[in-house]
Image (cartoon, rainbow, N blue to C red; front, side, top):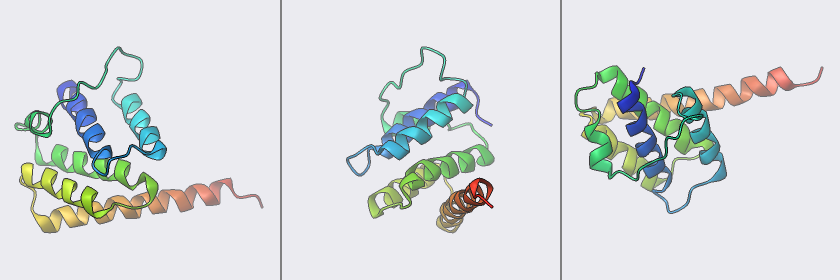
Length: 132
């Protein structure tokens, strides 16, 4: 859903989100690699530039609401890679949603959906890989 500029800004936001609680976890880094591949940036010379939160968010000022929802969902997916979104991460996601002008109830639904989908996917993979 993201154009090239939005994709790169998403990567900036993802790295910022991973640093919220002071540590980048290996499971979050693995998720980040998946997004680099999905955005077609894995094989390029693209490197995260270290944009500020405000600069990264500004790349979405003309983006559609569905794109902004997608960004929130995917950021939550990265943060939930360790099976929790702690209070600092939750505050950060809410700040992002506020910057995107997405209301609190919708943000809560997006966070909940992201967690549920991640858990559902994990269970599905467990069933698929189970031996009979």
